[in-house]
Structures are given as structure tokens and as C-alpha cells.
Length: 262
Image (cartoon, rainbow, N blue to C red; front, side, top):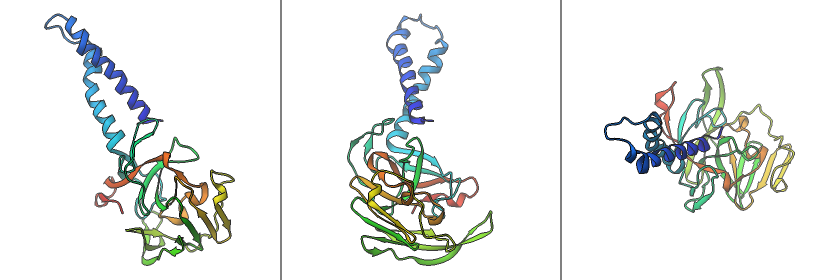
């Protein structure tokens, strides 16, 4: 469901009703005559729907985390806010960038339209920028020849399955965050048969090596062995960017999770 298109359609419909009433119909009604139902509901909702549309399209958009691919940074059920203007101002519905601003940086937690199916929104961490050489081999990450050091932390406990997974901290760019790495999972990646710039990636039993094309980004989940990401389906083009995840604003199961996202 394209919620942005639905919201845009409601803005147009209620805006037309408001305009007809404000500039024409209201002047024709005798004084003291109650507003017809179509004015009462349509015109009165227009300012509210317009405000929501502008806020959601150009400033901040809420999302709910549906999967565990970003554990331990984001948990299933987290409600997050995504900054829509950090990576440039885009026209709603068609997602066309009209104002250049900042570009994604290594370490950013980014929401984007899933390249194999742009109707879906995905969230991952930016690992590789245009021109970067990204190597993920034997569960070790290297960017442009520099290994991203993994520092061991306390194991992560899945409270539902009572299962421990090794947890590490690593630093991408200026941002330090935590990841999960399951030693029992295989190192190799089973990629999609084809995706744009598939020739930029080399696969073997130890993992994958990719050179990020211009205008594209390489992303990975923090739950490294439970994430379908750029290792599998390729790169995220700039036109698919939605925004930067910046804040957890609610979680029904754990209010302590409210706060900024690393």
C-alpha cells in the first residue's frame, strides 16, 4: 500500500472541497445556514491532512521495525522516526530529489526502498559509499583495505528463545555501534542470480568482495548472520533513499528503548 499516494490524494480531495467552500459556496449560503456535511467533514479535515502530509513528506516519517535484521541496534516492535531531509529534499510519491543536501555516511542507519521491490521499505546500516571496496570475508569487514575492528562485548540474550549470540562493537566512520555475529553460521553468501552491477561483486566460500558503483551504497544489517542485505541483492541507488533513522520514539514492550539510534 502506497500510503504517501493515499495521503496525497486526500490532500487534493479535501483541498478542493475547502477551496470550493471558501471561495464560492460559503458566499452563496444564507447567513446562519449550517454547513452541508461535505463541507463539515471535507473542508475541516483539509488543514490537518495537509499538516500531516507536509510533516511526513519533508521532515520526519514514522516506521515500525518488522524484523530482527538490525538487532541489537533496533528490535522488532521499535517505532522509529526517520529524518526525511538529511539526504536531500525529495518530492513525495515520486521520490524525486529537488534539493541536494547531505549524503549518507558510513555508519548511518538508513531507510530506503528495497531495490528488488521498491514498494517495500528496508532499514540497514551504510557500510560502503560510492567507490569503496567492501570485503566481508570469514565474518570480518574490511573497507578500502582497512579492517573494521570488532571488540568483544557481553553476549546478546534473545529473551524469547533464551539463546545467546556473540556481540561485538565496531566503528564505521565516526559512529560506534554493536553487531551480532553467529560463529556457527557459514561465511559464504548465496546471492541473487542477478542484480544491477552484479559484475562488481566476487563471491567465494569465504564471503564477498564488492566495489560500490557511483551513485550507489552498500548496506548491511547489524545482525550479520540474519540479514538479507547488499551481500545478497546488491546496491542501493541514490534514488531509493528515504531518510536517516534518528530516534526510537516508542516500544510497547520496553519504554527504556526510547532514545537516539547509534
